[in-house]
Image (cartoon, rainbow, N blue to C red; front, side, top):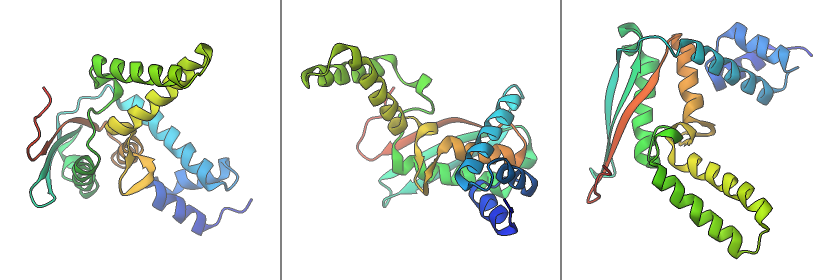
Length: 201
């Protein structure tokens, strides 16, 4: 299939990947845009894993205040070099991330960071729901796992759908930045304040 410059441009806008990477992904997927996006995301993950061991001592802390001062967020994102930390794409990512956290109220960055008792409580609720609805025991575990995955996608920052583009997750967005900077970039921590709410310890 003929890979046109327009197709490359469209894929580049979706993924922020390099022109040659976009062209190769489209050739690999025989022009299928979604498969090409998936291919680049997988490649981004592989590249990110290779970089995971590098020291990350630079970065930015950004704040975001929303809803007339009723919601506030502080977030820290780390990278390897001061050059990347001061770049426009990095600053835009951190700012957008703070805005996303204000809107989406994640409980943790990744599922491993959730309190085990909170996950167990959800598990027990899903089990009771499945058994009460008369589902056979042998499929109850599958139902629980499916509902837990949905729960993780709602409360874990990296698994949440990005509020500005719900076709991608925050992890996808992070991988795009890793591909752009060529560095190990990590979301280190965040705190979200909501007027009148207690912070969880």
